[in-house]
Image 1 (cartoon, rainbow, N blue to C red):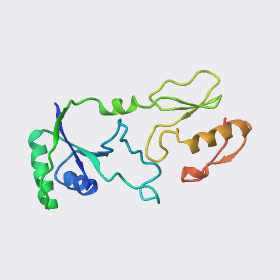
Image 2: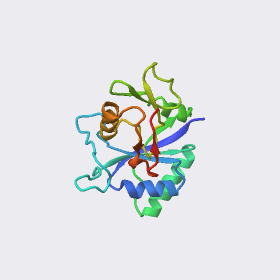
Image 3: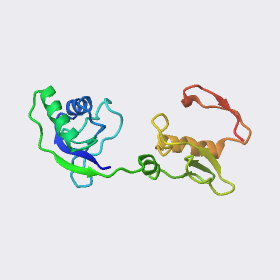
Image 4: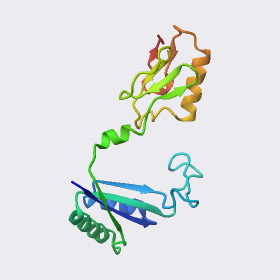
Length: 179
């Protein structure tokens, strides 16, 4: 069963995103309208940090169950915002195994000579490697962040086998003894 996606550029991405979700959108994605072109404007840091501003114009893509739901939601969102409905590009999106499609984006990440971050759906690393089983998510990310890599490289180089460590960044502050 295909879904319908509405795509349009706006300078009021937050307002339109909220209104479309309220009107029944299954999901709304905001992206750089210049992505993949020389006009791309990458954002660094976290939202709200000094010096990091969102794009002045964002490309919104809103997903709906079908074309009728998309049209109704767009009209409802426009009315709620007191604005004219924007001109949208309509795209049919085929259903797929979204979890598997997301997982396919992430594989093992080698850290230094011995450590490998391995998502649970991937095969274990070669013999001799130390596997850190970690599924990508909001709390820890993918494990590829430069700070994470540097910490793991430092641990690999300077931590002696059997040492006790305090995982200060884990939230609970649990102590563990590496095997």
